[in-house]
Every structure is written in C-alpha cells, then in structure tokens.
Image (cartoon, rainbow, N blue to C red; front, side, top):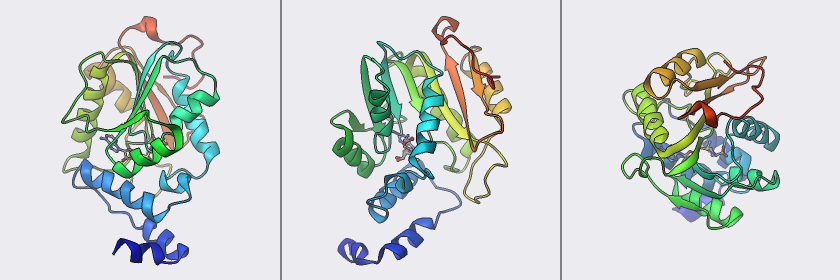
Length: 238
Ligand SMILES: C[S@@+](CC[C@H](N)C(=O)[O-])C[C@H]1O[C@@H](n2cnc3c(N)ncnc32)[C@H](O)[C@@H]1O
C-alpha cells in the first residue's frame, strides 16, 4: 500500500498534501498529518513543514531566538519538526549549553536525526511531562495554528501552561495572526488577547512581538523572572 503511494507522480502527491482537515480530533491526528506530509512531500523539507521557503523559516527563527538569552543555556524545542532550529542555532554560532528537540511525529524525529544528529526524541509532553524547571529556555515554533480537539483554545492553553512549567527562564512561542491568511483550517488568536492571558495565567513578565506590517506569524515570550529578559527591546514589542 505504502509502496504504491510512492509510485504516484509527484504532482499528485503534492495535490494530496494540500488536502487539510478543518480540525484535528486530537494531537495524535495532528502528528499523523505531519507523518503523512513527510512521506508525500519527501525531498522538499520546507513544504513538509509548511514554510513558503527557508528565508521565511530563518526569519521566524531569528525573531523567536531574539526573545531569549541563549548563551550557556539548556534549550528544549517542542514540535521540533525536522530539527531546523538546531541547525539555525549552530549556523549562528550561538553557544547554548544543550539542545533537545521533541516531536509527536515519528517521521519528523527520524528526519531530524538524519539531518542534525541525535538531539531529538519522540515524546508526548502532555502525557509524559518533563519535571518543573528542567530547561532554561523552551521554544514552540510554528506548532500552534490548527484547531486541535473539541475545544482548540483549551488545548492551546493546556499546552502553553505545561510548557511554561518546564522552563527556568523563558518560554517563547509563535502563533497565527488573525486575518492574515485565508485557510479554513487556520486556528488564529489575537496577540493582545493571548498576551493578556499569558500575563494572568503564566507570568506577568510576558511580551508579544508583532511585526509591522503584521506577518502571518507573531511571537510571545513569557519569562519567569524579568532578569531573564534579553536587553535591547525590539520595536513591535507589546
Ligand atoms: C510546522 S512543524 C514546525 C517544525 C519546527 N518547529 C520548525 O519550525 O521547523 C509542526 C510540528 O509540530 C509537531 N507537533 C504538533 N503538536 C505537538 C505536540 N503537542 N508536541 C510535540 N510536537 C508537536 C508536529 O508533529 C510537527 O512536526
């Protein structure tokens, strides 16, 4: 069955990959979607990861990492996909202490190991969480944006609350800006509302970075302690 799928012409595989459900019943179904993309779109990593191109991915990474101090820090990258954040950090010469990428998709973890080495693991951090304060910095990049479960907002908040517990210093994540893209499967959330929720539910030390003009992606950073905020506040930070 699988072998037959690989025999399909490339244009047909690409077409199949464009079919997206309006919502995922649970996070396992969301991960299975990425398993399928990894097979259907093999050979085009940015397509698998749903980035228009590498430049966009690098732009998003550079904005996200600007929101945390990384030198000498331990880093957890949740929803690491094919591991490109690890490659980017190394390319930039950032002297972090350690990096671990985790993902719910086995195909993604396999792909990340092939590309960047043994720094990746399959793990469901909701059912098998890390202890509190296990990492200095936690990233969640380009993971939120699809409706998961019966109540996508509740799922998102549960995931954010869980990940914030793992961090000693900063938790940085991205989300989708409402009104910037017109895909029926998008789950967007207004940055001001999410920032307000973070400040109330997670920590008063939270910031959002919305670029001007707004991109599809915006960034939120939540800090355990204001001392851990990097200096040089960016324009666009609210
Ligand atoms: C669009 S990819 C982004 C990958 C990577 N962060 C990047 O920017 O290149 C989203 C990834 O998140 C993973 N994912 C979704 N929900 C997850 C969860 N709760 N825990 C771990 N990984 C998750 C998917 O399997 C997929 O590999």
